[in-house]
Image 1: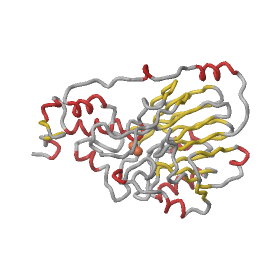
Image 2: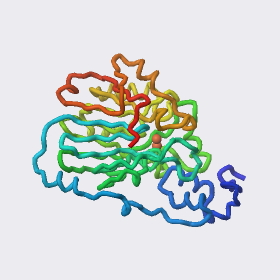
Image 3: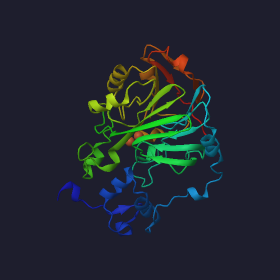
Image 4: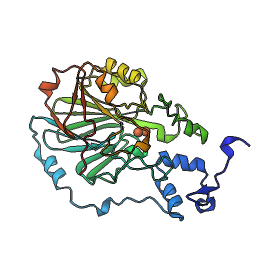
Length: 327
Ligand SMILES: [Fe+2]
Ligand SMILES: [Fe+2]
């Protein structure tokens, strides 16, 4: 019998017939992808559908209407708030807010416990996700007027312009934990061109307050040439780097930085003691940051950037360390 034909006998201590039509292969696809309903059916022992709960969220769209009607927007600083892992909120000078990649634990349980709490129900105007992996896609958790999930193309609102570029996830684990092998073990391709859907990615370029910020997500280190041309100048770059080299190896990240020459680099996807369990297998980004020629250990989960200041910087690392917003 081939390895991929093996059928699981036990899931959550109950016989597999609780999940009719689901092999563990589909469990693993569900684990990484949008199969929340399927995964939930394993946990609850009966079929359920994933349903949005956003109709129950408090508040309303008054803030978005205010911004929409303002017509004229002030110059000023751009706010950056770190919520741990890859979750970052950008606040435009006019006060429009976008939250990227809110996280959750894998609903199927296959990838274990990563996060110490549920993602805070923080109010924002826009929630966005780069891809459907559990540690990036809790798009129902923020109290958000808009949800732009995996958006490709252009979006403009108030004093913000966002461009989404479709690309692909890093598909070969560069570190000691060969997590991409799990996909091969369950019969799906991690790498393009025939990658499973949850290894698709969108990278976002956010333009506001004169600052161009690139939200890298878990993208591969070697996108096609057209990617770099389309992105153009990058002032602030987020990159997923931790001591275990879970997504990008230090050398890959350093090469990206050499190519883009951003003014500011913000490490993401590392072990934050505020939000993340050691069980995630992630480690801190301390060693990578301390190896750079210029870095700043931030003393809280927030910072403000003015374009005039940023333009004078050169590959300055701004590291949130264990600081993270919790509400
Ligand atoms: Fe991912
Ligand atoms: Fe991730």
